Image (cartoon, rainbow, N blue to C red; front, side):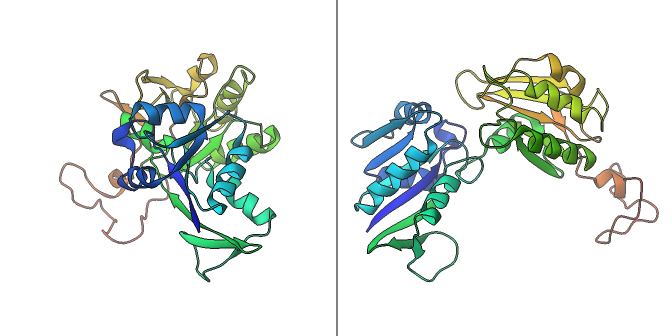
Length: 287
């Protein structure tokens, strides 16, 4: 029985790989992935002596199919994803493909790792988590995601734009911190500007925003700006955009979204404010 590892690469640098990711990459006989990710692993020296299969950007289903077939043939296969396989990564296409082709659980378990079979052939599947783009970007900015956050991809390759717009409106109404994946490409030049216009219906122009390009890679760039200025900036597929909520602010070159302690405590004395009790629900209605 072969094994298919769905491996999260994190931001794309060696320290950003989890210990488990490095372990399974060492075990793998075949590594399959988008050519840029494969190149990053080669630069880390992790692919020596392995068969490497490179695929293009829009060939996710091809990657999933080849990885699954190789594992069914008895090989140990690592299918790599940038960030985390379960966050805009390769876990969904693999599971969708397996569902469509009639694979059934062979071990009676729940969740992963697990064994799946079809027509007498069996594969062991494991998802190896990685540091997501949102987490990597947040670590470079400070604490932008310290309160309720939503992730929205602006790519309309697999999601219709009207649905993306509805999600942006919902995020604005709910005052979520918003992390935008895939903000711009050569073909999609207006979606970031439109997203900013939508969110400006719900929060002021001065709302903190940030763009992080190639987090933890050689060409890393971090830019602090505002929601009002986002309509005029240039971004790309290697850029992640963070837009604060109505409480977010910049502090000494960092991006701070308060967790809410100042609503309950005097941060000088650390004593509870009048009418508030530690461990009980916040009483202020204007929070």
